Length: 104
Image 1: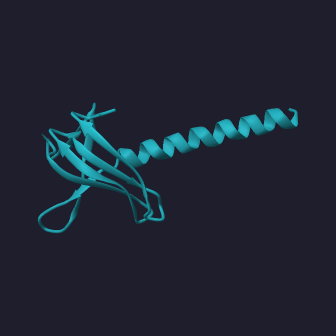
Image 2: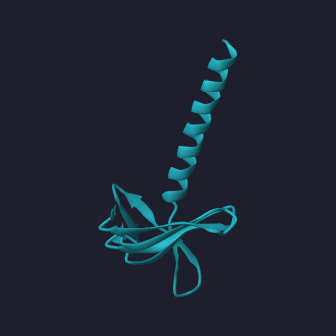
């Protein structure tokens, strides 16, 4: 395999790993209950559930102890403002959602 082909293969592999990591992070939303404990939300289809009911309330997602996302859910779907952060804690982006869809 020539050098250019090796570099291209490596870039494709890194891109696939990056997207897999992002998906994995997004699917691990949780919330802090009234008892102060973290509770994971379960994704079924395109709806997040808590104790067999679509979740309503504030959510977070962390990676290596750093908050990556926080926002709100209504009927188990992202709703309202969602903030994304770099691992350093610096704000990366702010998105708005309604019924699980990002507004343009």
